[in-house]
Length: 334
Image (cartoon, rainbow, N blue to C red; front, side, top):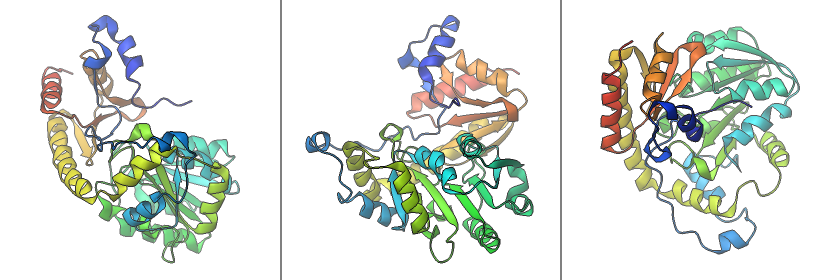
């Protein structure tokens, strides 16, 4: 099983000899999750006593928010990542890498042949490889690079002409909805496009395990059968329904995250090459390992990608957390 960000307890145990910080004293910047979580509503007791029901308004809220009713609610977008590959006959699949590693792992496990293509080559490189299926994250996880929606739709059109598919993971896309293609996935303009979304990042609801997949209806129905009944708990559906409908909170949060993302990128800029989106920034440096250790010994957890010399930083929350990160960075010497 792959390791991911958010393993705070393990980090606290590992670095206890360097300072002994309690778990509550750690600053977790390893996940790219909005530190200002959507305010959780009161949960009616019936949510706990009754089985979830599909006609509770969540599907309508999702259709309005994402601009499409060709979707399915899932226990996190991870459920779609694991289940989608089995819905296609084994072929050659191109993943633009670096990428969220659950994607290539799932396609390999389902019997597909994998081609890892550098994300720096862009979609043109993936299309030139003539693979039937292309998988990518937009914004990219972990580099934060973003492709315009028009380029994604053109890629889907090229793949369609040769019977192929484009899978786009937009888990970090909510802060910049104009760059997302979810609304068109599975529609007349892009019937071979499948888009994945998550409430874990922008809404800060990772623990609720709520995600969505959008695409052509027959493929979505296959996915529904693969996932099985009651994929989401009643309380998760309740929270998701309200969050998706709360446009005032969404508008304010997009503004706040944009400013925070810019601030984080500026804070890291003196240390190396920085790319960023609204929810995280990624530093490229040959000293990524030593910087990771330096921060961890001060109870600040980041996400290290040693194979690519990358160090990903999520957003601090309150101002004291920003100041704490700034002091730790100022005290680092390569």
